[in-house]
Image 1 (spheres, rainbow, N blue to C red):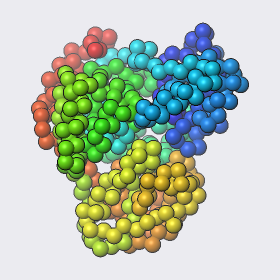
Image 2: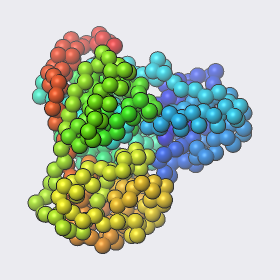
Image 3: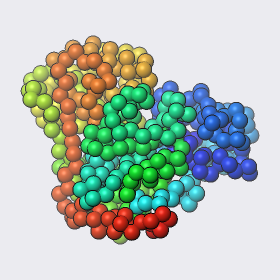
Image 4: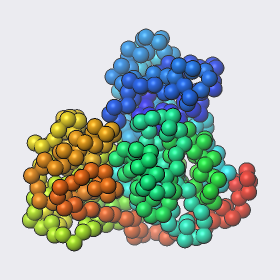
Amino acid sequence: MGATGRAFHNFNMLFRHDERHEVVAFTAAQIPGISCRLYPPQLAGPLYPEGILISPEADLAKLIKKYQADEVVFSYSDINYADVMHIASRVIANGADFRLLGSKGTLLKAHIPVVSVCAVRTGAGKSQTTRAICVMLRELGLRVAAIRHPITYCDLVRQRAQRFATLADMEEAQCTIEEREEYEPLIDSGSAVFAGVDYAEILKLAEAEADVIVWDGGSNEVPFIASNYHIVIADALRPGHEMQYYPGEANVRMADVIIINKVDSAAEGAVEIIRENLTRLNSRALVLEAFSPIVLENEISAKGKRTLVIEDGPTVTHGGMPFGAGIIAARNAGAVLVDPRPFAVGSIRRAYEQYPHLGKMLPALGYSEEQVAELQETVNKVDCAIVISGTPIDITRVIKVEKPVLRARYELQQVSGPKLKDLLDENIVPLALSCEGDACKIK
């Protein structure tokens, strides 16, 4: 069971060449338009010459019965504990075992040091933290490669192992908006990004040109590569989630450093609750605090103007956030929010039905060319004077917007604890300088 990221990795690591098991299907969840396809034979390997079916998760019970499945392996993230057990109950009621995989068989081993950046929840602030760490490591004299958690929705064979160093690379690969949201900010900050489907191959590509790897985690997923330094982001706007979501709690328990982000926007007492929970889960981790200040990039004033707010899609849809950087920026600027729901078309309209909490914000959904076109049509139909974009990308590189666009930008600003750059200098630089072939000591 998966959302086509962790599920493919688990298969590649544990089942692709294992004749003791026969994998009969994948199920797809969370991401639209990725079911009813095949995991292609070029990736599935010689044991699966016809590939492996990818079906909707709604068909889970039917698949168990059709194939007389003995075991279901749960392989996706950012899901609360109650829902994990509801799924487990469906599996057990239909006669199969329910399995969660640990790290022993699913972690790749690198030949150079690895810093991993993961989170308690989607939208906690991994991206700006990853960007900051990549810059710090370069300033410390190291060559850095960022490996990004998979975002594989299209041609899986073409996406087997990819490298993005320029905007042209993304254009050539026909990246979705969701891919661009992860790759573009890193490219703009000077980092090459590696991603795809087969992470053993991706790791080799990255190792060939770097002294250190920064793993940029997706959602609240645990890493695919064994880490020398595991940094986890907790969200001050969602106290308690560090103990309520899978596998975010596992990240907390594995962490060397935990950064409580957005403390400048937190409700009274929220940071204290998070600190207490972190101590309960992992008392050895170093806990830092950070702001995530939001700045409107353009000089155009938004005060009093009818404003459409576009937000990062995954954060406000399956991530469940009731607002994002765009909404905060609009409120701070005194903008008048316009409700985009009456203007939504196609799959964008259906997203509002699926996620009723979205309210007066437009998720930047673009998992296909058709959906990008529907997003553009929706944006341009909205009766507004300006657009505030809270996505990490320049949305005008993807869609043509007929109104002025103000970007809401945000960067990590550490406000407590030892400086992150000093911690990297102490824990990673010596490893990188002493690393030769297999000699790099992995924790």
